[in-house]
Image (cartoon, rainbow, N blue to C red; front, side, top):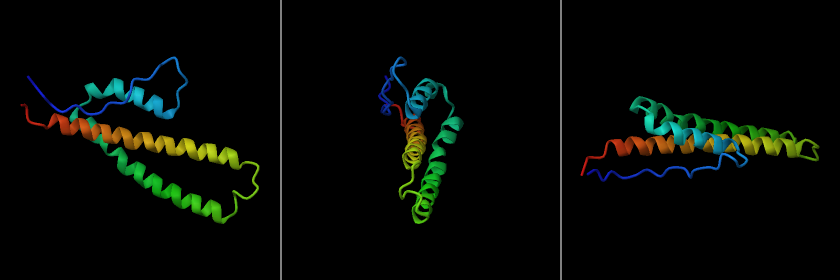
Amino acid sequence: MSTKQQTQQPEECEIDAAADIYDVVFELWQRAAPGLTEKELEWFKGGSVSAHASFRNFAAALRVIEQLGAFDCNKNASKMLFFFSDYVHCLEAMVSVADFADGQLCCRHLPEQ
């Protein structure tokens, strides 16, 4: 009998509940992950590199926006902040999926006990 270590899986979401980007990504991941090949898992794992680069670029863009005074008494500041929040949530989902893919790859390479 196999005693392979189980990777942490995202909690099952309620399809009836309101969903944000993160919920949708994880619902799709949960449904697709068991059938993915190692090559596909490697591709998903690589998403963390892109997400980390996007985080760095986003931080630099925020510094420029702040230096330009875009947040000072701007009537659109709340809209910008909601957009930034959604963007960070997308990147968070990418990093998490990459972590789950890495965990699945590690489990597939554990010796049978």
